[in-house]
Image (cartoon, rainbow, N blue to C red; front, side, top):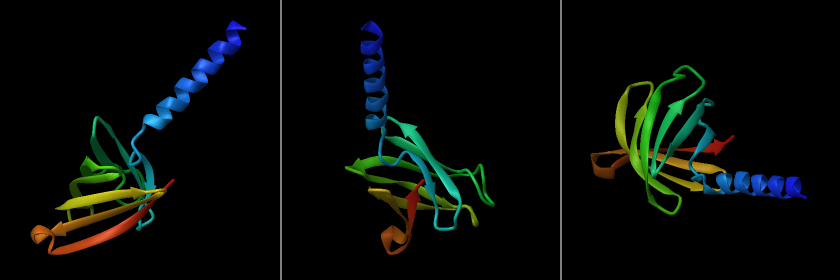
Length: 114
């Protein structure tokens, strides 16, 4: 009996830990086909490329700005230029945008959760 209760408690805790993860955390497939890992906690997240030509390169930093919305910076790994960025998660899609000139010129991409 005790063993069944312990297993039920352990399963509940594992599921609760998953539920507590922020929707932006995890591995994402970029438009270029690379894998980007987004990790963090406490409202701050970093983006690191895990595969492709620029594997290992940190390309972004975001903070929570609303429900499934984030603001921060994103770096183009090809040019090493950093832009102000926004991101939003909707289901298994992550829309990222980087802007210059106070948002006058922006480029966006949609990434997909792996």
